[in-house]
Length: 432
Image 1 (cartoon, rainbow, N blue to C red):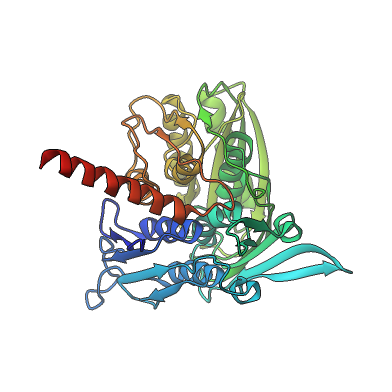
Image 2 (cartoon, rainbow, N blue to C red; image 1 turned 60 degrees about the vertical axis):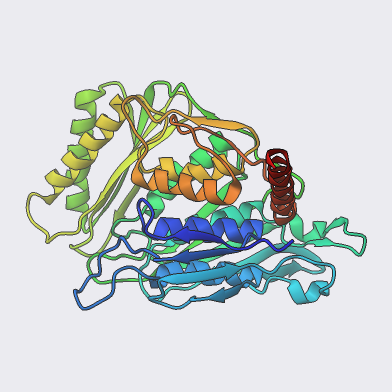
C-alpha cells in the first residue's frame, strides 16, 4: 500500500515557522511523507515589494539537514519557497546498507573504537540556533541511526553506532529577536526535558555568541547528547504540583561592568520586594562589548524542580532608562507567570507538545489557572495530531503514540490505514 503524503496548510493557526519545523521533524523521524503549502503565509514581509512568508535561511538550514540525514526526496527546498514536498527514504533491505547511511555524520574514533559522531549546521547570518535545535532534536533523540531490515524482514541494529555520543555544532544566533536564547534553552528547556520529561542529558557549550542586535554577528554552539537506545520508549510524564519558588537565576549580558552592576542591583531589589526569602544566583554575568546589546533572563526554580523563565532582548536605541525598563518588564512578567501557579511558562508549552505526542501513555502539563494554550501551542498540537493520529483534549493532555526507537512507524500507519479501509468496506456492505 502506498501512503500518500499528508498535506498541511502552512497558514493554519500561528501559520509561521514552527508549523514547518515540527512537521518536517516528525516526517524525518517517522518516514511519513508530507506536503506543506502556503509556508509561513501569516508572516508579513519586511518590505511591501516582497512576497509574504516562505522559507528563510534558518528554516532552510534545518530542513536541509533533516533531508540529508534521511536522504529525503524533496521539492521546493529553496529560500523563499512557499511549498515543500518532503519524502524521507524508506529503510529497506533491497538497498545495500552503505548506500542508505546518513551523510550528515562524521565518525570519530579512538584507535578502533567509535567514540562520537559529529555533524554541523552552518548559517551565514544570526538566525536562531535554538530554533534549528528545536527542529532537529526529536530526530536526534529518537532516531536509531543504523536500523536495517534483513532479508527476512527482521530488524537489525548496529549497536556500535547506537550507543555513542552525538555532537552537533550549529552556527547562527545565540541571542536573537523573537526566538528563545541559548540561556533559556540551557537553563529552562533542557533541565525540564532531562529532569521532568526523561530524555538523556544534553551538554551545551557556547563557542561564540551570535547577535541580531548591534552589529549582526554569527556565533556557534556545541551540543553533546546520547540518543535513546533502540527499542526504548519515552514514558508518559506529568507536570503537576509546582511547589514553592526557592531560587531565582539571573543572567545578565550588558556592555560594561557598571551597567551590569546597576542591572544586578535593580533586579535584586525587584525580586526581593515580592519574594523576600528567595535565593538569588547569577549564572551568567557577561560583557557584550557593544552598547546596543542588552539581554536579561530571570529563571524561577521551585522546590519540586520546575523552572519558569522570562527574558528581554533590548532591540531599541540605547537610552538612560533602558536598564530600568528591562528590569521592570522581565520581573513583572515573571511574577505574573508565577501567580498563575503553573509548572511551565507560556513559552515552554509548545516545546513540550512533540514529547507528549511521542510518549507512551497520557502526559499531563499544568500550565496554571486561567492560562489557555498559546497560538504556538495550538499549532504544535495540530501538527502532531495530523501526523501521529493523536487527539489533545481541552486541558492539553493527550494519549501519546508510544513511538519506539527503531520501529517502522510508516508500516504502523499503513497497517492502521488498511484496518480502517477494511472497516469502512464492512460498514458499506452492511448498509447495502
